[in-house]
Image (cartoon, rainbow, N blue to C red):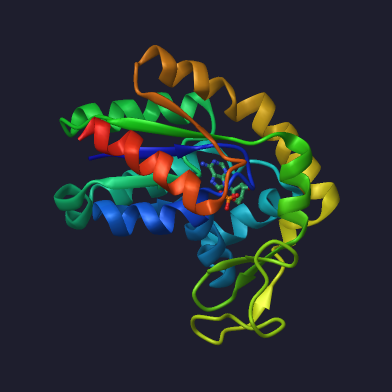
Length: 217
Ligand code: AMP
């Protein structure tokens, strides 16, 4: 099964992705995580991507399309199927993805669109903290760690992403509405879109996604 997780920044894509890949045995492909790793390692791609990411803008299509094309071609993805998280984010990326998939005789089985209103996204994102070691997400109010600043799972240090500040979050939401939201219509036309209410609890959202995906298998 090949699945796309769609939704604005802060909708809970990363949190839900963890559960979905476990339950359905899919390979998690997060362009945001891959780009952050490239920035951390100061690779050529990371150096190119860094300024866009810090501003809350999209990294140029050709960069992200390239990393997704390479990852999808790896054997584990062919065996298990994928969960794309944070990609595609523009209609051009979606069209390129369709081309790559059809050349491999593959297609998208479901697009899970997690719906949350902007006001809630702003408070979710600005309070978000992430583990430096295992990337597990927390929230200072809604999901605090047991010990301040320390990951419950691995003991890693929690940090605030550079693009989770108020100004940058507002920019990311504008970018989402202008460039990514048109994908909702794109995938509705393909008959693969499923809307999920992202304001419910993490467990409830997961159950809704699980049921939607089971109906597709
Ligand atoms: P995310 O973790 O998915 O919120 O992504 C963090 C940042 O990485 C975004 O604000 C963009 O700057 C960049 N990024 C991630 N995925 C993409 C993509 N598919 N296209 C362009 N930029 C991306």
